[in-house]
Image (cartoon, rainbow, N blue to C red; front, side, top):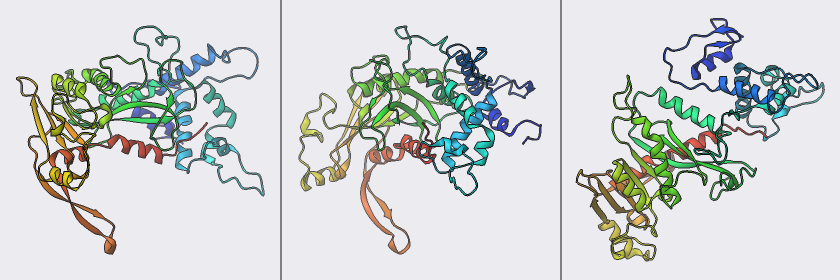
Length: 416
């Protein structure tokens, strides 16, 4: 099939996400001064280099001949994986999509679109050489700036770079959280890149990365692979990752011809959970001037405040303590410097003895009732719950990375 200009349909998707100039000797119009980063052009180039160099199956003169791949074919290869998910996930037996049923037999997994795009052998050939990095130029282990996740980092780098490149102004409310993926390999010894993953449904072993996204839209702004070789700014892993993420986001504040203040009109506000909380995080945010809202573990409360004034881990939760928190929630304020940076701490009200900390996030704290609803039609019920501005801000701006995880899970991408 061809488009209006006679190009294959795959190139319509290709030209939307990637700047390019020539594919199969066909010139394709590009945007002048296009700031986007190519993906499939580089992937096809690196795959051919890997086949010719390390595997030596390209132009070897013996054995099976390997035909060099190209960007269009790599787009279709990725598309076959997504199509498998659209059809309902083959549970790892993806190759059955190519098996044409014989007369009198039924293969419910067979798909004509995937089978016509590739032969099974060709799909396996590309799978064997598919590369997301250039091994010849990648920083080697032990050298400054080495990233143990370099073999698959390019796909994350391209997505985040291109989203920021086509953004005029980003949202000022951001959500920061970790996301996980399953992988049963060992990875590199001593890097801590792959390991046991706790508390994540369906994943027992794999890798994690910290992701920052807009609250109002799914727009990833920055990421950080979780391993032992990241820069060390703090002894605690969570606060150290916040500092590393902020360092990576600094170029987003640089001016250019289109955005006089970078993609952020002002310093943004981050929301994250108690893994990233602590005195080090609050102090760093106050010094840098960006906003923070986070839950605070009861054993990681700010130093210098007597325990009797806070909801601490040893605080007994009973009707009297619940009523006290509801009637008069604790709200501590500390001015960090002369420019007006403020660190704030408040209780989570009578629903829990957890605390919420802020940096330059809320102007006041007051009690009010909020309505909660469940059910539909005749089964619909509503009731009132206590609420304050601190809790409302946290609930409205947290959980966006979990939404991304949920959407990815619904894509049913699964192959061996």
